[in-house]
Image (cartoon, rainbow, N blue to C red; front, side, top):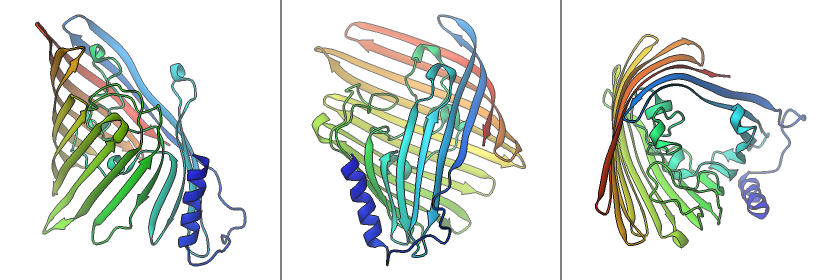
Length: 344
């Protein structure tokens, strides 16, 4: 990967008009950021009732500088900061940007996720494009989201074009990496992503008085016989938002289709939201037909009490039906979740 990163740096520097030092000879200065997402959750499930404390915390390091020739150079590192997780690095990459676009090189999400459209949500930590907090215990660590991030933790190179009249495109490539594992709308836990390629397009603009975000993306991993694509649209009509996303993933004889629909309304520091997600999948495991259907409903409110600070509360209902050969079963849960997010 070192050769790959050096190659990306060479491309970015070649695209610059001429070499030049930054106006500030001290170079890139380190910045510090991150977030803390903490919740108290009550869950009433078929098998048990429980009160849990849930959290997701990260520390971000990074910095950038712009040279006199217009080339922006930066680096970004994210580390998990939960007590049980130790202090493990989640993302680590360098980037180069200019009027020609942007190149990311390293451990970062690919184009299919970076340009993916998100539907409105009750609380985007719970029912957003990527699930950071899972209040349903019987689902364990499985993400119930629609993020197209198959090679999320793999080293990769991504190119993002400049925005032209609201349009932007991107492509990514990752070599073999053992960090792409199943979850959410991925079809199976293959554990290895080989030659992962991603492409995506996105539009953001106004159509009359309506704000429009629309996009589509595609991911393929040849050695895994994996294909995934998504399409989505989000409309902003005054204080109201309405959006829908569809994504499908296939790997071998396994397939998962996911729909997410959401709406929200913003008034002052309050945002009220609601969403529905359906994930339907089937596969053949050792000659046994396995299938499952999940429905999740959520409604909640987010209150901004300061810059980068929010209180959040939501109510959710999740229902899962599964079958394996002659066996069928179901599980459901009602959850009430209250918490806060602080960005720093």
